[in-house]
Structures are given as structure tokens and as C-alpha cells.
Image (cartoon, rainbow, N blue to C red; front, top):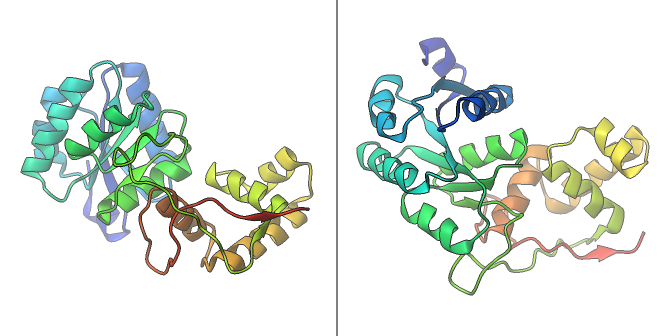
Length: 237
């Protein structure tokens, strides 16, 4: 349940819609671990979503899109009819472009795969609240017109191969320490690469860099972003 204090601090109130109790608990933990998000209710069955939303008044809904896809999407349609500005983000198992389109047509504004990171989930919720459509960058594009088609993102100064590696780690929500371990480089070296990435992308901070890249991958222009979609040109290092 949301509180005036939570609202005053800019916390985004999130309703969790998932069938399995174990998955619900996992999603609650994931949402509450994400900076700026707070779980405010878990209706369980899709048919209870609208009733709970009336009480909890969430800013966003994170839904599981799995075996019971039809009932869940019907609930999404009902929620968007009752609350037109409600941001709905789906965590799904399917990478089928037809399923992605079906979800978007039902009012879903963010479509992420189940193995997404808390960082990407948080960004997708905020992007959906801002009216953007977000599709997980792991999903392969289908035929033209099925999902927004990517164009190239070409910074004025191309990223080096190592900078591209670090950027990929940032997109997974990794810390500087973990990036260093994964790439076998020191934490100070990671920090240097991150500074270079921010400078070349024109990003204010790490979160802004992730926002620019994911918006570009999905063919959506972010504020301050003058690029198309993400396919960074690398130089050899």
C-alpha cells in the first residue's frame, strides 16, 4: 500500500501480477530491490487485478506473461481502460515477435524477458511511465513492421572494443567491481572506461547511458539523444 511519504519521495508504486506464489515473491523482491520502486500489492489471479488497483492506486504494474497469457492480457486491457496512464511492464518467457505485438496491443508498454536485471526493470518502468515503449534488447527482431526496426547508433567518437564490453556489462546492471571481475581488469580501469563511454554517448550518468542505448535499440528517441538505434561501431583494442 502506498503512503504520502512514499509518494513525496518520488517512489513509483508497483502492482505485481503473477500466478505462482514463488514467482510473486521473487518479483516483489526484485521490485523492492530496484531503486525508486515499491511493491504495493499482489492480486495473484488476473481477475482480481482491477479491484486491487482501485484500492492500491499503483503507478505501474509488473505482470508475468507466461502460460496464462490470455487472461493476463485481458487484465492488462481492463487496467488500461480504467487507468489510461498506468504503465504496464511484462516479464515474459516468449521471444516470439507475434507475442510481443499481442502484448503491446493489449496496453503493455514494456516487454522484458524473465532473466532481466533489476536495473533494466527499473528503467523500463520509468520509460513506460513516460509513455515510451520498451522491448528487451535480447529479443531478435522479426520481419519489418513486427517490432520497431533498429538503425545504427554511431557516436562521433566510436567506442573502443573494450568500452563496448564495459557498456554491455552496464546494460546488465553490473557494478564496477563486478565488471572488473568479469572482464579481468581493475576497478579503476572500469571507471576510466565508464567515463569515456558517458562522454562519447553524451550521457549524464550510467542510468542515462543505459536509457539512451535501450531507447535506441527499440527505435525510440530519448530526450537529448540524436541517434537511431544501437549497433555501436568499435575500434580495435
